[in-house]
Length: 450
Ligand SMILES: NC(=O)c1ccc[n+]([C@@H]2O[C@H](COP(=O)([O-])OP(=O)(O)OC[C@H]3O[C@@H](n4cnc5c(N)ncnc54)[C@H](O)[C@@H]3O)[C@@H](O)[C@H]2O)c1
Image 1 (cartoon, rainbow, N blue to C red):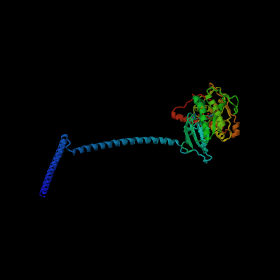
Image 2 (tube, protein in one colour; image 1 turned 135 degrees about the vertical axis):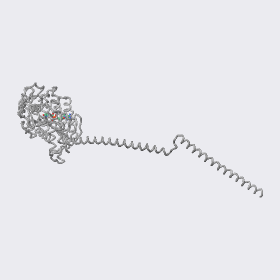
Image 3 (cartoon, helix red, strand yellow; image 1 turned 90 degrees about the horizontal axis):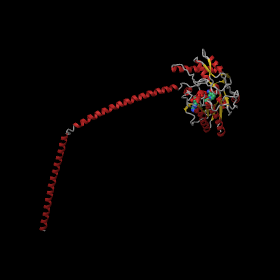
Image 4 (cartoon, rainbow, N blue to C red; image 1 turned 60 degrees about the vertical axis):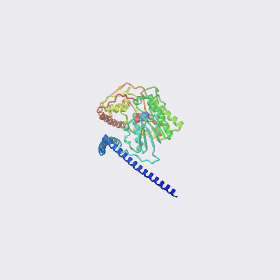
């Protein structure tokens, strides 16, 4: 018992001593750590002092100033940039405003009166070559009748000015397109007039003239077939060539030189007729063919080199009126409004074979020169003859019995009345050209091609 108690005491003492030793060790260790931390901080402080970063308060101030400058500089350059952009935008807006003003100026304030047609009566009518001389007059009548009109033109000889009085009208649409390329539009009727018509124009690029009258006509006939439209082909009295039959009835097959200077047009139109009847037979396309004789009136091209335009322009400027050949060759001239009435009557009729449209009143070219000279007040021009033109037809006068029978059509406008209106138009054109060029308009280099 006593031995056990002694052993217990001894254990307690050992444990106590050991605990005391551990406690002392821990205190000493703690002090050592503190000292180490102090030394470390002191070292860091010294290091900062060495490299001059001791003044912590100073550093943010520099930074703040730099930042402020940068912000000021940035905002200043941003403001300048914004100002420049604003200036540029203003310039662009001004330019656009000018363009809009020009475009608005082109839109007529008031359109010619147009009849209202109901949905069933109103047709969508495509006019190829609608910006040309005949086409633009046709467009006017179709619009006034209340139809929707689409003009397709490549502006080779046509002008926007001829149809600009319809720009912006909800029934009018204009497509800048060359019909040698296919066209996809919807239409109920097609008046196919696109082709240069005056000799200087169609001789300028004979290959293009043939393409327009062959490929272009195929494209239009193809379109008519696809959309089920009726199509009228504008053919010409030139299919009769230099005729051996006088006056020319539709049954006359013609006398054309296939390789002469006029062949690109004459043969082109003959192929166009052949194509029309091939599509009618093979594809059931409803075709009409108008053989148009010489037509004149306002909107003729001033330099188209044909009798009326040449003689009128020469008479208005007191220049010599030049007659090519002996002047005994004959022509019959139809006023444009009469022709347009004939085209519309033909389209509406059920007659499908070719029909002559022209004025049968015939005059020699020499007589025309004198008639025109006398219609221009105070004209001091003289009439002179020049060398004959190759393949120039000697006689031309339409037999219009068929048009009379099937369309109840014949021309109404007298030569004198038509010429007076035409002279007025050319007088205006001349003053406009003189005004813009500030010089007299002289375009007599192009020979008369009758
Ligand atoms: N005016 C006449 O005395 C007369 C006589 C006989 C036949 N014609 C025929 O009547 C039609 C119209 O004649 P016009 O006197 O008004 O001639 P124009 O030259 O004033 O008009 C023809 C129009 O067709 C356009 N055109 C030409 N080639 C084209 C193409 N490849 N694609 C698209 N558009 C094209 C022209 O830019 C022009 O607007 C022509 O087919 C012509 O052969 C006219």
